[in-house]
Amino acid sequence: MLKQHLQLKLGQKLAPQQIQLMKLIQLHTLEFEEELERELEENPALEIAKEDNTEEEYAAPDETYESEGNESIETDFDVDQYLYDDEPSYKTASSNYSADDEDFDNESLLTEGQSLYNYLNEQVHLSNIGEEDLKIAEYIIGNLDTDGYLRREIKAIVDDLAFSQGIYTTTEKVEDVLENYVQKLDPAGVGARSLQECLLLQIEKKVSSDKAVSLAGNILRNQFDALTNKHYNKIIQKYDIEEEDLKAALEEISKLSPKVGGNFDTQTITINQEIIPDFVIQVKDGQVIPMLNSKNAPTLRVSEEYKDILSTYSHDKKSSEHKQAALFIKQKLDAAKWYIDAINQRQNTLLQTINAIVKFQKAYFITGDEKSLRPMILKDIADITGFDISTISRVVKSKYADTPNGILYLKDLFSDSLTNDDGEEVSTKEIKHHLQEVISKENKRKPLTDDALVVMLKEQGYNIARRTIAKYREQLNIPVARLRKEL
Image 1 (cartoon, rainbow, N blue to C red):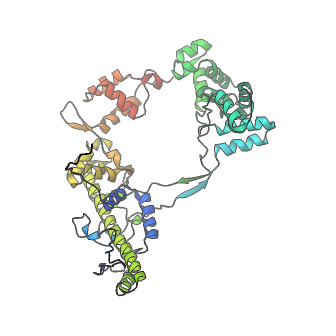
Image 2: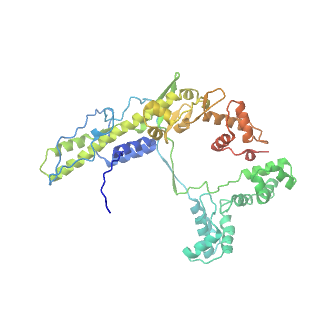
């Protein structure tokens, strides 16, 4: 049975302009350039202004364009109702830019490369191989991953060959083609089904008469578990060798590549792009001066030509074609006006955020020492700027700054805090720095366990639990003590 009832709901929806602004704020310089270029192509009412041009405010005519059915035709949005507190400006120029900003080259470098798949296929077609074996070899090569490994089971490949290629074969046949053709191709190690097999395929192509190479092959073949677990004493006892002999063998193993396909492009064309800093931070006379990178933000304006065309069409109220043309032009002019305002708002948001970050981390930018980093979270900068935390997050995401100490990823400046024995709040980055120092100075023959690291850091005033040490160690990509052992 149907019932009618009233229900009150509170909701909040973002206007399309607000969503677009958030996207603009999140873009780093290269993405922003692409977005700006796209907008210039799509909206002819938006154009790049010359420096000596003075901008006049665009004001749309008061006339309302009506269709034949006397229905009022409105534009998509009214820029004047957009949610900005300050007076909108139609230029993106800012007095915060320095005249001697570094000129960053932002051209993408296109390099043509060859994929691993094509490289292997070329080789196998030049080898002395039968027609059926060639098709099997091609299918195996097509199933290799980007590292050059064959991760699929041979049985699955046999089934696929039958269903998709109409080739009915056996696992023995596929293994024969794999081992006698695919695994013989360059680079050595390709077509391996495990790390052990990959390393063995490489070591077997070296001169076997060399004592170190021969020992390395024996270790990889028969003592791989002991090697990966760094049970060096067990290997020495097994082969009745000196420590120096083992060192030489390990040196040969270290020259092998665990990912032989890593040097090949996954696509024929690869794009290498330099990091273009979004901010420039200078230190002069003890003062830290942050600036926006202005080279990638040209001054924009609303097209004078389009304003003149709109003025011409607006005086002709008889032709419906002219009315539609006037409506189209007004929409483009409104869109251009809003877009310029949005870019102004984006740059103001970025500048206020970087100013707050620099003020908070002034000591770090002056000294360049990570120990000077203060604990800082997104809320700290949000409180200073008055922006929402989500806005700050969008600003720092994928953004870089050119500092006297090199290119810096903004997110690296943010960290949680811990309290040391003196009651002072210290950054977790500082603790990680101390942890790295302690591990770098340890005796590699007897690396420090996590429990030992807890004791050593406690002596330095950092009372940290063992699980926290393990977490920081993993974040720093430092293996456990057993795997840090060296001869």
